[in-house]
Amino acid sequence: MFWYIISIAILFGGLVALTLHDWEYDYKDDWEIPGGIFTAMGLMCLVFTISAQIDYKMQVETYPQRKAFYESVTAGSEYEDATFRKEKAELNDGLFEAQWYKEYVSFFSLWPDEVLELEPIN
Image: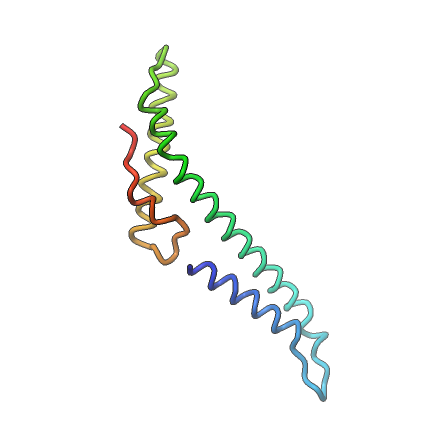
């Protein structure tokens, strides 16, 4: 939520700067470049926030399938076993990090609430 507020505030500030002018003295030329920069930054922040939230939601939705795969797979060699253990550790680290962000800094986190319900891979 925080990132949406910041993105919209930057976008709104840029749009205000683009339309800012005084009737006696035309200051529009002085505010066109900063207004354009702030508008572009606001749009980029908004697009980044939306795409990150969609990506995090997709990761949470596919986590049970990845967990089921890594818990059911049997390694054919020591190399495959080491690779699977490494992948499990990376997925668990990512899960613990996402859960920590959602639990302790939830105002800034883009992770969905469902991430707290997920269990690590055994």
